[in-house]
Image (cartoon, rainbow, N blue to C red; front, side):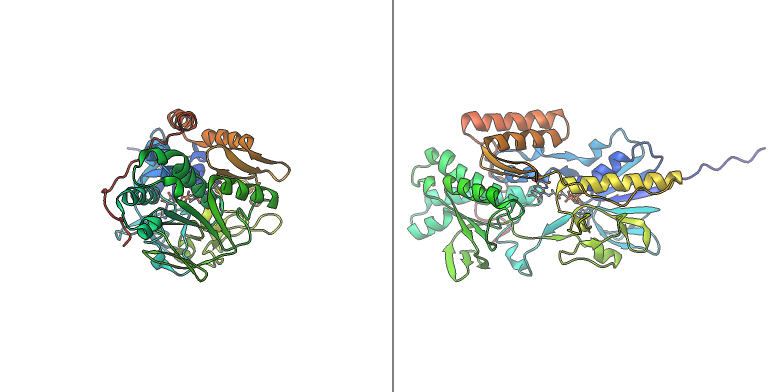
Length: 429
Ligand SMILES: Cc1cc2nc3c(=O)[nH]c(=O)nc-3n(C[C@H](O)[C@H](O)[C@H](O)COP(=O)(O)OP(=O)(O)OC[C@H]3O[C@@H](n4cnc5c(N)ncnc54)[C@H](O)[C@@H]3O)c2cc1C
């Protein structure tokens, strides 16, 4: 009897992280003949650019997140695992999971993103949640709505004032977007619904240590955004760093401001991918990779997206934004395909910047393409169309477009639910 021919075992690619970078990579490797294991600590891919709209009651969580398993239901080559990675054994070529188990790989791609950095003051995390996950967004939504509810019942004027003061720390796009919508909520939407407080008296502070908001944008656009925020009733504090945060309020330089809702939008740090691999990292903890996005001396390991430190052609670091992460995912897919085919590798990774966008409230935005600057409602429409386009699937596109249309014509937000209990602060004191 002839000996059965051995079935060749497909090359095993392990991808950690189903964010923008990991998802793009796996999509672009369709039909490449690999066996792919996609690991994420969450069961969903999240469209982070619209998270602030969940935090500020415009969108529901399911409108901006999709189960990863479902996204690859038709890809027999992809196995999705819900698990937290805790390390990498580069000698044994194994990914180490938090539960003590290990998964072997032939090629590994780490696309584990970034998280908040409190600049060494980690105790602030419980007092001033950042915005990175759906849980963060619903926590911020809950604290903000509870503050209005508690203010309605509060008889002490000073405590009521603190409940009606909202501080957003950090004036990059996320801080600007949060402050604008919180101001609209307080000053244009909620005021008719309360009997003992006037929500239009609420103070919304946007606190920035640097000299201007939206530092990555041209000065004319950041000036426009500051004026637009002030028109909405946001107090923009520039050149003022927060020195302390407590359950009672924030200290800005030497000045204490009583305040019960604080949101952190000031700093990010990469995931510990560099530490897992034992390779150099930049100041934000991002793993230094070579021009092919490989870990130094490890051609079988790639690091991509927010957790990688890569330089642009002019030597500047590639920004931590979604298009950069997607471009890196697409690039590594090309490298892997070339290797499998025994073809020469593609030219080194080159980042193409497509522009910066940020909204201010529900009808103004700023858009910077470098060669063209847009602001006001034209920019807002442009921003809206782009974001709808990049959502996954027709259902989400229709749902988000409808929510925005409804918010626009009715002046109401439809996701104003307090969940996880109706009393007190959740994780905070
Ligand atoms: C609030 C907010 C607003 C933003 N707005 C914009 C915007 O308007 N425009 C823009 O271009 N960019 C924006 N960004 C940045 C953009 O979202 C990121 O640059 C992009 O998500 C980076 O993609 P990534 O794949 O590297 O990481 P992520 O998308 O963060 O994905 C990382 C994935 O890895 C998983 N993971 C992490 N650690 C582990 C682990 N140990 N084990 C298993 N899985 C793990 C995570 O669960 C996650 O799914 C925003 C970011 C935030 C937080």
